[in-house]
Length: 426
Ligand SMILES: *Cc1c(COP(=O)(O)O)cnc(C)c1O
Image (tube, rainbow, N blue to C red):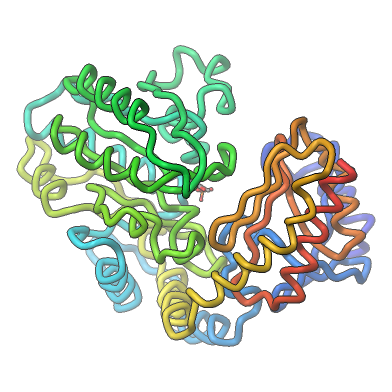
């Protein structure tokens, strides 16, 4: 179909993320993608600085992932998971148990990150319900977080960013503490830890769990914190009979320089959420992992099952491509690749620090962030970046990138240059 016609139909009928209807900004029409490049209908090619929102860590049309998908499609694309099981899902669950922090042994495969957070919350609430401690049904989190867009995850997103005022009376009201002090390498602030201790102790009787994104708060503001706060949370939650959920949907699979961000802290949460890069960006799939303590608690309850079962649970295609993506990651020097991107982003963004309107520049693993002292003019920033051959998707006051791990040094330089130019022009 003619590109102009497609875009007209898009504007008329198709919702886009966080967009009004009809759409106000024209999205770019992508015809295909390979390696780290998106090809547009007008013939332009853009280096993808976003990995399709943290997911496409190996780039697009990777021959190994394509082959895994085709092979699985030749056997079965899907089969219900109630009463049936299959090798792709069994292998995936086993692999996730082996790779994630020790102690997480049970895996619930589901459709998307938000749903895995729903499942994680359900596990925690039901755990306390089963133990007869029915008052423990609230969650505690720090501000500046993002956990997805369905209702329970929304209730633990940053209350201002998540527009909680719009949802008063609809969203469960959770306990919020201030956001963790910024900086991966900044020393642990003892007064912040004392505050965490006070809040967790005060609310212990009503708290089912503490939920946080470890080390990197993503869509809530792209902030980094010292892993020491995670150790503090682990000790405090254990001391006060509260479960701990780590949402590693964005940070999982190497992005921060550790395979899982929990590894920076050497901490095992009671429940862990994974998504995004799980399938290398090929298909939607997520997972909630838990300890035998959590699973056992639920199974001893009045309702001895976890009442959750998405239609596409354990989807064989997604499982097969996830297995291939994880093997591909582990068969390569992913740590070297992430370190190389980290160095490239640090060097490439060094010039942005002194630009007028730039408040902060920070890099951790394969994540680069330029924070402005004002909201980004999205249309202007996108135009500047695309003119430099790069796809970026800034939000709020943030111009950021998390490139596919297969980016060459030159491509990382191109991405950093586009971010700097966008910061100068937006
Ligand atoms: C993206 C994200 C989610 C939501 O995942 P979806 O697949 O978009 O539902 C939840 N938590 C974090 C930390 C995320 O980055």
